[in-house]
Image 1 (cartoon, rainbow, N blue to C red):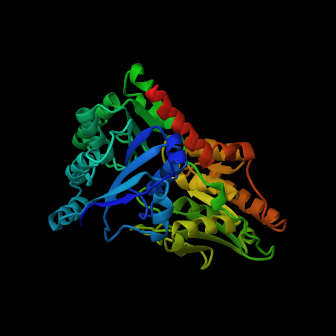
Image 2 (cartoon, rainbow, N blue to C red; image 1 turned 45 degrees about the horizontal axis):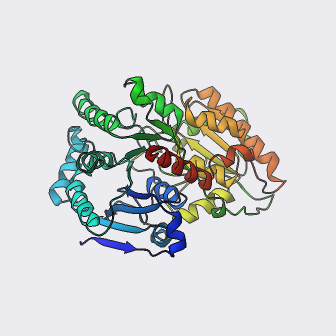
Image 3 (spheres, rainbow, N blue to C red; image 1 turned 90 degrees about the vertical axis):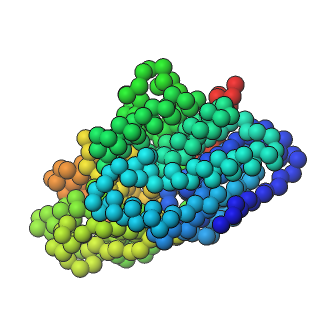
Length: 432
């Protein structure tokens, strides 16, 4: 594959407004259909900056693509340079073996995308030969390889650098680091934290978790910038009051994030109050990966109570959110969860009631602010009560038809226009 550059021309009047030249690096970008790609495109769309983007040009067998997103995700950019990424047969085979035999050293420095780095560095050199250098650099992780590349670019060119983290790095509970791989990634993370001029996280809890390892002077670099939704992407859909009650989870399940706490709660409700679940369907839209859902309790539930649907395109996923009677967040068990799921922000845009089976932390705090229902996935009794209360609420309010749910002031904090403006302010602060 060769480099693909999409040049986008603007009128002089518009260009005059875009004085800050930003070089953005994100491995994931549409048409890739994953949360990181969607959120990066949304943030850059709503920030009035003259942005040149470098992203990966690849088509992996297991990667989801949504080609309807390509034009909307590129039309606001000054340029989009898609740098080829491919995996050799040996790399694919070694990755499978590493996963099968738990060889944790492989693909953990920091991840399997590090072989993209040489091509990106060449692409940057090519880009610099065509115009003025950027005023600032922003790298988006994950994958954290983007930040390692940013580290090299900072060293070579000295540009003001913002490192944007969608998730924690070393402190991510979904990463199975052993002592060696944790030590290696801690060294990489420390270099990034020390070298970047601003560190952007999606929640204050993530700042507390990640920066606790570092001296207070480094913490002063940290800023909080949440995920965002675009109000125009959601259209409330009328549903007949006597139709089936549908409560949806939209997204993937994997690892320690499983539907088992919900299955256990439903089994208990079927014993104590079976009529509550009459005409109710819990629907999961997305991949279950290799989870053995029957062994987790699905086999003990009546047919039709829980339904599984395949992954859909992003626009369709928003329609499924707005057409649901209720929406479901499920997180992995933890003492505290610092994750701000991008699906939760889309749920806020859909304006439907939300139930969170999630540990104390970021998502619990936000759902509580919205007036939703929360329970800890490790507390079976609490989860049963929360699920029952949520179903009761949805049933009682279904007859009133679709209504906007959630406080407008809370929703407004996650409006993409405002979040994009806040990103501009962080960039301006850095350059002032």
